[in-house]
Length: 146
Image (cartoon, rainbow, N blue to C red; front, side, top):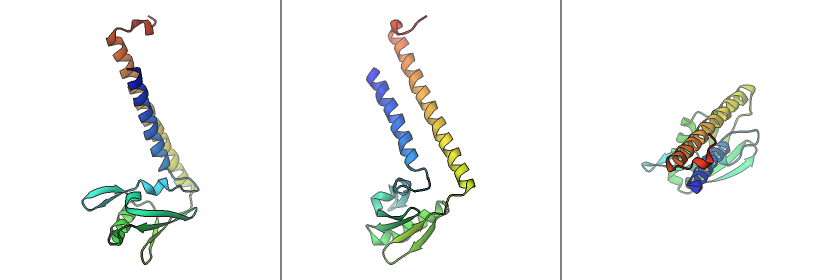
């Protein structure tokens, strides 16, 4: 029972870490693009499963799709996200340029971070409450004072 609680809590923390990878800072990490879901062949795939992603400079990335026929679909899917990106199509790849962070974008990022933090707190509290209820049901009164 204790191990289940620990596993559940680790899962919550890992989920939070994955969300943080997608947050933009001044120097973008590949995680920002890698997990972007693209609808292709009647399914959704993370971008890292469809293309080789390389970073040219802190705000510019190159995508080289494994299947050249999917280049247009990837381009459209990225543009539909309305992330404020500039997408330049080259012969067999896409160049993706991110805009420089403005004060407005920074505030939006902080809002998103606070939202992730609060969601994680709520999940953690729910996991803790469920664990305590399970302990009470089992009759583990020695763990409780009162």
